[in-house]
Image (cartoon, rainbow, N blue to C red; front, side, top):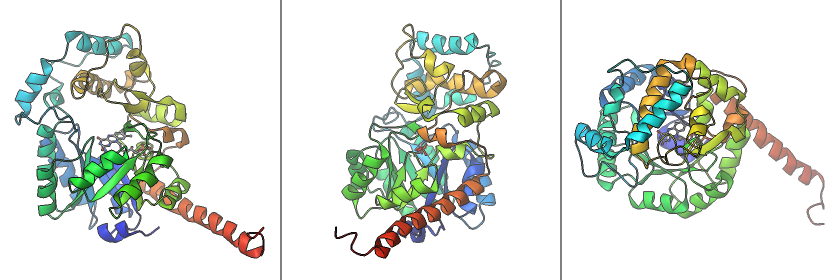
Length: 383
Ligand SMILES: Cc1cc2nc3c(=O)[nH]c(=O)nc-3n(C[C@H](O)[C@H](O)[C@H](O)COP(=O)(O)O)c2cc1C
């Protein structure tokens, strides 16, 4: 499965692992794939510590960092994170905070001790925070690529990343998004089908991937959304992708950041349990059904706010659940894609990577055998 992107990034397998967990990123890059750390949720100082750690663990290999600057960027006019936070907090109706608190209290999750919600001062998914993340990423030479989600990265940022000798990756869910990325100087496109975990669009992978490949050629495309086996990797390459970009399968690894309760939920989840909800960020996000997602569907629930306001509403709940995971079995907040239904056991990240590669080879051999059958039956094709 050696494609041009393997030569471009000097990697063995064109398999990209998106994760918010540094251990997964380092393990995948070390094993011959390409790990990408999701920066959302980290303060710039925390991100610096995570990247220092990965630098030490990853040996001579490289990796990527993913930031989030949405198309409708609430941070465009306010560069100071604390002032932006203050301004946006004032736009959240109190009933939303009260409803989020009540969901957790109804499930018996204790309140956070006063003062423990530090990351609440950081507004996720705005350029104000993401530009600080990008600057930190560029201070680390082993960061070979900076990816941006939810919109085309601003051209000045793309310029800075290129000047630092790194590549820009852009995630998209439609041909139009992909074209906007290319116009803004993006080097590699990730086409994510609707079945993928986290923020997601409306078009299924099998239909989206080849359309994006054709629309942006010769810009390389990575196929995302629903990659959980080597056969699915083969399907992506068959449809013209130069590699795959996956998120959900890495959640089911020993290294991942999930709590035991979330990991248990992932292993028993069926594909149809990975539903679309706006309860986490305000944008369509695919996540495992739980008491949290169901509560936001109830008739008495307030309508989730747009990004990034709903993020502020859910932020405290996320912190509270990770502080008290033992109470989270029925009310966890777990973004995951439909491929969750394929995850039946927890394995090491390097084993997942090598299994994808092995299954890819088996798949291509199976397909080759079909061609050989045709060769062995002369005249069949002419009938
Ligand atoms: C838990 C989780 C969190 C995610 N967070 C982000 C994010 O912060 N930024 C981003 O670009 N993509 C994010 N994604 C989407 C992934 O980058 C990737 O496109 C997606 O997982 C691919 O589909 P799959 O889940 O079927 O592999 C997230 C996905 C998951 C599962």
